Image 1 (tube, rainbow, N blue to C red):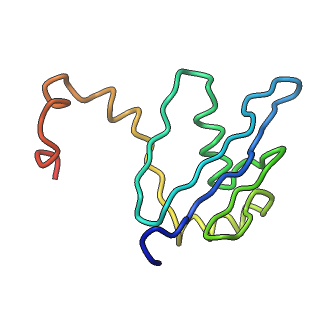
Image 2 (cartoon, rainbow, N blue to C red):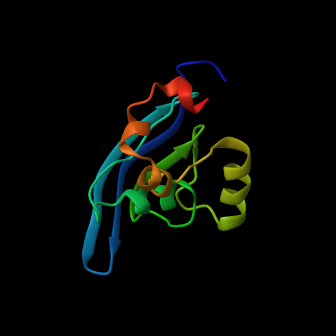
Length: 112
């Protein structure tokens, strides 16, 4: 894929659990080769966004496009195939919690 090509895009994505609206009109574009992080306080919807991108949950509104294909309402089998061939997610909260203050200030090359 060419650089600058949008690989993952969320357009107007929303999600509710019962009467509780947890995400409203989320827009995101990630280009091929780009690394992103999703940060926020507890309960802000980070895990819900990742679960929808991974196909484990479906948005109530909007689209989730993976390489131009709307995967927002695809079944688990289709999303499993896409996950294994197209993207990676790394849950870093356990790693960050165990890194010391000194390690956080080391140059990035120290971890390579």
